[in-house]
Image (cartoon, rainbow, N blue to C red):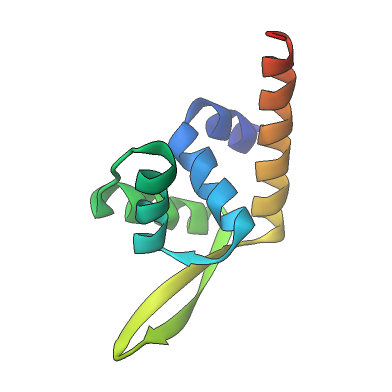
Length: 100
């Protein structure tokens, strides 16, 4: 499936799905987690177009939430997104198993 191959060849996409598999997050939280866990800085110009493409592919959806007076889009995985994430991680595990 093209989506799984795309996730395997693009670690940013895959890690974004993995983060959303753990819990719902808004874009800024995703950027913070990339920095905290991978020491990789993402810009809004990277994460929001990525989330938009994932929305169009049906991998994520969002709901709006207020934090104080600020309205945020909070992203969560769809069932399709969960399955794509699990399949891509499984393929990677099988690939890295060969190194053991």
